[in-house]
Image (cartoon, rainbow, N blue to C red; front, top):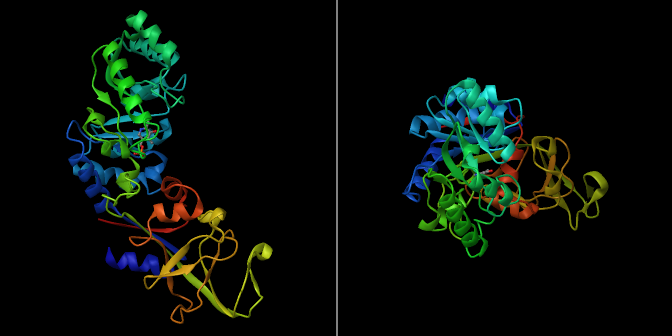
Length: 368
Ligand SMILES: *Cc1c(COP(=O)(O)O)cnc(C)c1O
C-alpha cells in the first residue's frame, strides 16, 4: 500500500490524498454532537468529489446505516456498497423511475403532491406499503412540499395511503450563520408541519445545523460537508479533522526580469526580478480559472502566491524568495494548513464548490 502510493505519486502531476480515517472520525464527532438520533452520510456528487466508491464503504464499516445522494444514478452506483442501509435520493422522484426504487430498495424523497401520487400508485401496484421520506419546504423554496401541498395533505390524509413515512425532513437555509433568525423560523415551521402530519420520525440538520443547538436535533441528521473536513462552524475553530491534501508538481522554474508578464493576457507583470514556478494543475482539474491571481500554495509551510491566469493544465506561482523550490518540488494547494475553506475564501466561493470541483485527473491516494 505504502509502496503503491509512492509509485502513483512519483509519476503524477498532481496528487489528491483522501484520509478515510478522518472522514470516519468526523462522522463520529458529528454523532457526539447529535445525541437525538443517528447521523447519515450525505454522499451526493461522488461524496463531494472525494469518491463515493471509497467513502461509502468506509462509513458503512464504521456503522453508518443512512446515506443520501442527489440522483437516482448515484444511488444505483453505491447500492451494493451500503447493504441494509437506508439510501435516500434527495432530488425527488422523476416520473417513471418508481420501479427502479423498488427493485433496488431505494428511498425516494417526495417533495410534491405529484411525487406522492406516483409513489402511492407504485405501492398499489406492488400490493404493499412502500417507504418514503416526505420533504417539506420551510423556507428554501427549492424542493419540498409547499404550503398548498401541505394544506391538501391535511385536508385529505388518504393521499398518503400506501406510503410508509420513514421520515419527514426539511432543509435549513442558513445553518452556517448561527444568529440568522431564519434558523428559528424554520425550526418552528418544521415542528408545526410535523405536528399536523401523521406521526413519523423527523430529519432536519445538515452539517452546520448539528451545531445550532439541541433544538435542531432530530431523529436523523444529514451532514455532508463536515464529513469531508469543511468547517460547519465558520468563524469558530473547525471541530472537524482535515480530510483532503492536494499537491501539484512543479514542472518548471524560471527567473524573469522586472516588467516581464506571466500567463494568458499578461495579467501579472513582475514588479521586480522574479522567480516563477509553473505547477501541473489547471482549470481542467477543477482548479478553477477564478483562482487566477488569488490565494497561494504552500511550500515548506510558507505561502507561494498564485500569479497570472490559471490555464487549463498549468498554474503559475511567484516563487521569489524560495530558492529551494526547484522543478520536481511539490506545492500544497489544499491541506491541513490551507483548508478547502481557505482556498474558497480567496476565490470568492465556498469549500463545497472547491471540493466538488476536484477532477478525476488527479492521482488519488486513499489512506485510512
Ligand atoms: C446537501 C444536502 C445536505 C448536506 O448538507 P451539508 O451542508 O453538506 O451538510 C443535507 N440535506 C439536503 C437536503 C441536502 O441537499
